[in-house]
Length: 290
Ligand code: C2E
Ligand code: MG
Ligand code: MG
Ligand code: MG
Image (cartoon, rainbow, N blue to C red; front, side, top):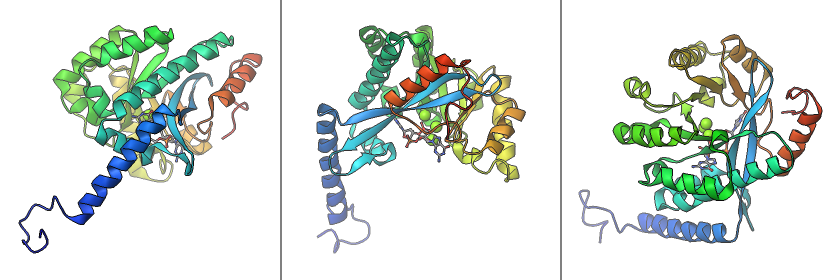
């Protein structure tokens, strides 16, 4: 028995690990079926340009409408989807759905809006990523100029030489490229400056106490300065209060995203927001409310 064999034994067959593996398999199968049954949907969170007050883009965020559990947030299933590889078909579904929705909004007569889609590390490592994305864009008829892909630092730093080729290919297609949760991972600045990226998103852990914590303020300012010195725009995530928005605006941060502007909303809710936006001066203020 593994237990009796002592401390240097590999515990592959310990009941705990068995349980975990079984659970994982169960979850993987449940998720695979959920994808077939169309239990996933996208929520959309707007971003606002701090100088103009215009809503120039939105981020698509996946949700799982589980028949028994209700709405399951992505942090509860994306890591497992990553581990099992299910993230590849799931990620393609997200991209296709975001593109289809973008086309739908335009068919309803709204001006085109940039839609950001999260791409996981495993997805980014796919050999034919560019071709797969190109195919989805073609099939949905969505203009790549309005597609943004959010990558994490770890995804692009894992193999920088390989990453730069993929990024160049995506950039050539007209896609906007962002580094998500910036500051939480490990980035080599010498690599970063060679990446054809467009924006950095300051992780919300630095934004949370930015008006009270001197260190967080310094980090946020440093990220803004770094981004601008590389000709990148910068987005602050997780803005929940006007004070945080003011801080970012005063430090020339370009864009904000967070509950203070709007929580992630359904496609229909965002559609009616676009309608009201069209009837006003195109500015977000007062139309969205936390
Ligand atoms: P993320 O890409 O950094 O997305 C931002 C997360 O912060 C979202 O959580 C959003 O709802 C939340 N958020 C936005 N504003 C605020 C705020 O003011 N305060 C607070 N406390 N939170 C705010 P969500 O939707 O639960 O997503 C969590 C993470 O799951 C995402 O973080 C992303 O890493 C991942 N994710 C979501 N959708 C996808 C997807 O389609 N594909 C992949 N690969 N990952 C996804
Ligand atoms: Mg994101
Ligand atoms: Mg983020
Ligand atoms: Mg995050």
